[in-house]
Image (cartoon, rainbow, N blue to C red; front, side, top):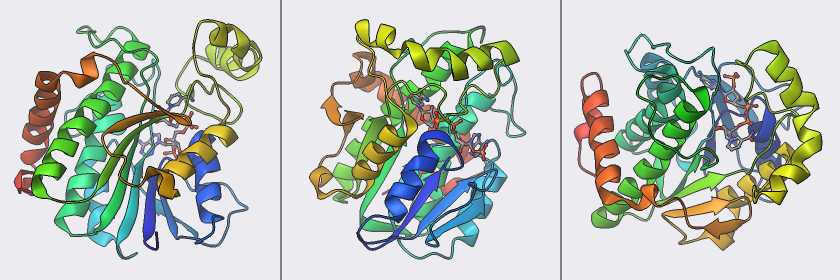
Length: 287
Ligand SMILES: NC(=O)c1ccc[n+]([C@@H]2O[C@H](COP(=O)([O-])OP(=O)(O)OC[C@H]3O[C@@H](n4cnc5c(N)ncnc54)[C@H](OP(=O)(O)O)[C@@H]3O)[C@@H](O)[C@H]2O)c1
């Protein structure tokens, strides 16, 4: 896989571990890490940083328009947020911020790169998601975890709708929904918007109680283990031809019943196109 890898959300946690794994892998591919802050040094020299704020469509457009790293062999949509601080905030584009960062502006990034013909014929599109809190209703936006889960389910629904369109077009792009497992603390900053006490518990207590989560069937992990598993999904020949699948850490698993509902997939697809098309006519172009 010779092309460049574009990786969102590589400045901490699972993403940071994963970009290092990818950069040090056999073919030493160039990895462009895009988020708001640069990943901390030391870093292999084939990792480069580009500024990206996924809460802003303008920032996504700027990254896609200025792209100068050649064809993209993998687009990894890993950036994500959760937390009460984000809840009920709207971006300057008028979208709830968890939806914008976790899902919608990743979809925009894909459409803009596709429009510029930057995705290689065998490009892998990896969407980091989770079904950990899968429940898709919270009309009052009262629960940050449910809102988080909504955005992650939207990603899976979009992935499956996208796979259908890719197949119809005859393209060979691979789309994988990747779940890193429950990975609290240990360098993950996912709880950064939570109140200080909750953050402290998340960083210092929860990581020592993972056995309890495992007892109830939750797959738990750590950023290095999940980062390595994600790197494998990005690079390994093992995943050749595996498209439209849900990979939980190391294994293919079925995703939730909701996620296979074609009506819901089309609902998310149409909402995405309609919401983005106003300022981004490229999303209306056929494949
Ligand atoms: N940790 C878990 O238990 C778990 C479980 C299942 C799924 N996941 C998913 O795995 C992914 C990584 O999680 P993590 O635990 O590694 O969390 P993390 O340490 O908080 O990493 C999140 C990344 O997203 C980036 N990000 C946040 N807001 C952004 C924005 N507005 N624009 C661009 N980038 C932004 C952050 O970079 P900047 O702050 O530099 O922008 C950071 O690199 C997330 O999608 C998360 O939902 C995590």
